[in-house]
Amino acid sequence: MHLAYPAVLSALLFCTGLYGVLARRNAILVLMSVELMLNAVNLNLVAFDVWLSRAAEETLHSGQALTLFTIAIAAAEIGIGLAIVLAVHRNRGTSDIDRLRDTAEGHEPDGPDTDTPATGTAAEKAEATA
Amino acid sequence: MTLAAASHGFLSPTGVEIAFLLVGLVTFGAAVVTVTTRQLVHAALWLVVALGGLAVEYLLLTAEFIAWVQVLIYVGAVVVLILFGLMLTRAPIGRSPDADSGNRWAALTVAVASAAALVWVVVDAFRTTWIDLDGPAAGSTAVTGASLFQNWVLPFEALSVLLLAALVGAIVLSRKAKAARAGEAPPAKTSPTGASSSGTSPSGASSSGTSQTGGVR
Image (cartoon, rainbow over the protein chains, first blue to last red):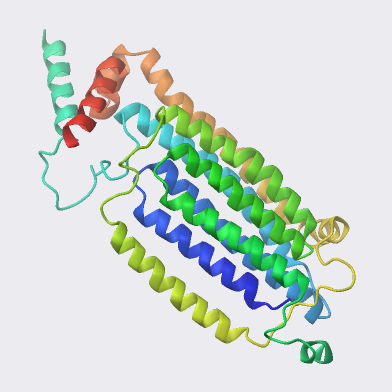
């Protein structure tokens, strides 16, 4: 098999995942795009490991071992990422990453995202003083 | 190797190459639909098609153990987690018109430019390289297991510790807000704004969230 086939497919999948990460607004769709990018890297690792295991005399099968490690780390990443997304959704009521701009510089502080906690603290203080 | 490589023709693909190309087209199409569709559950289901196609590609590259691990972990576990996450964050019935952000044309430009650069470089670099798929399989379970437990034992064990840490971390992240909501009064008044507003009035926080979405639209 020509080595260009898996390499080109891996590059195309990686760029598809890149588009998804940059263009999606929901955080879970961004996580799915990250999974696509990781799978593109896995395909590259497997293809080059199969090529090098025939071309070289001694091989450690490092490509396939790294692929297994990448799959395990991706599983851990999706678990932690979904836990974080669910916690953010529980606290904010949204999982759109365009609205989570509290630490962003250079945007006006009187957006719709910041006045709701302010009124919450105002009501909190009123309740505390009363 | 050189004689075998000399007998290859660039425009006379073998059967494995044709199968790889067809499955690769299906995989790439499913990936494109995954990142462009506006129905969230459909995106997750097309992700299943893309990951399953990649498992078939691993089988065509004679890496069978990786293929079955891919099917078990990605198609079996990760997509189910993603579907749970989608259904817990919103009830996705029908289309959601706000799935794409406003900078999708910039994202498309970046993705097309990087795809063109990567494909050009990769094709130019590996134009005369062939994978020899004959003989015993390079990634059978025996070979992969032997190399994994002879040469990669220490990273393997470290990875098991990392998985345990990720498990505990996910549980901690999921339980913290619940504990703050349950024992509301004393920690909620001293904690900063976001946690306190949701801690004392979860219904108010959720209604303010929906009113935010209505206001922005």
